[in-house]
Image (cartoon, rainbow, N blue to C red; front, side):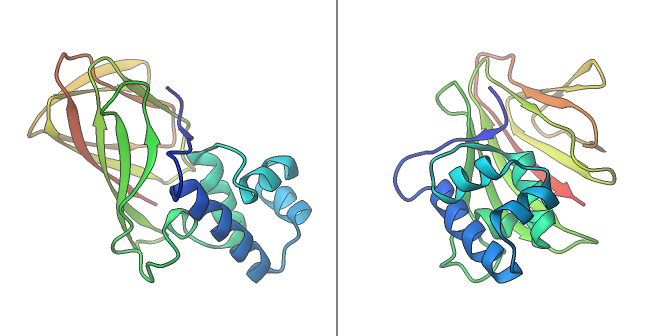
Length: 189
């Protein structure tokens, strides 16, 4: 399964992204073409996302947020929530029932810190695109066994263990077990 943000049905996070992107782009005084040039995301994709007609990768959302001078959380959160301390939005679902990533909250760091609650069903995986230089992830496994694929190596982390690594490289989360996997993911930039 890719790192694409997929529609989950009515009133989901893609609806928030569509409205937030339109509002934040207008606030920045940028036309869609100017945002496309600044972010490296095609104008066609921006039009489709703003119209609620496209799925978009999480890394592309990061690039749009950077081009707008806002945080990733500002694009995905429900606009009715005034702060980033309680976002609680599903932003990814896997191919296997029970696999999802839920952005719980975001707090300021040098640039930003995000806290996620992840679950992967048996046999599912998430393949990530590299984050910008200087970004890191901290993972704490709460149930099952996480297999982290990093730099071509696979390492298992059972419940109760953790790891910290640079996410400015390709990586993947895998559940190679017959039971569900749950873990907390902190992203720090």
